[in-house]
Image 1 (cartoon, one colour):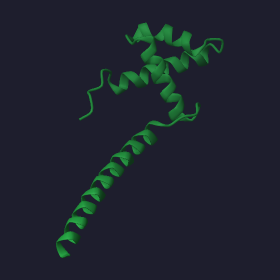
Image 2 (image 1 turned 30 degrees about the vertical axis):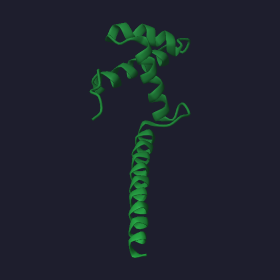
Image 3 (image 1 turned 135 degrees about the horizontal axis):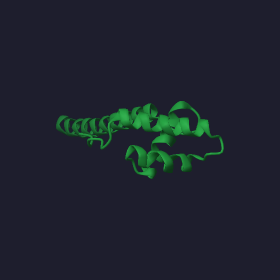
Image 4 (image 1 turned 120 degrees about the horizontal axis):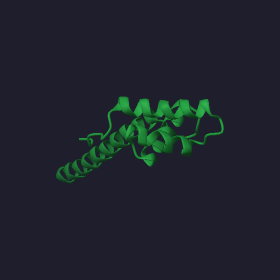
Amino acid sequence: MPAQRKYPQELRERSVRLVVEAMSEDPALSMNAAVKRIGPKVGIVADTLRTWVRHSDVDTGKRPGTTTDSAKRIKELEAELRESKRANEILLAASSFFARELE
């Protein structure tokens, strides 16, 4: 079972939106400066907020990387592959067992 998230999704979205708005209002403002300005106002550590902004940039296509949806799908496929390999090992062991019984 996944761990409970510390911050609600609404707070994450609002905080990221505030950083993006601050950067668009002042083009000279870097992401780090915007995060340091907005983070204390919304009660979020700057490093956490910076990570959220980067993930948002990847999800919207502004930055290269694996999107949240793609990462989730990859994780599901990897779990499915592990289960398939496990099932194949069980079937292989069973077939060799029964092959010996027939001899």
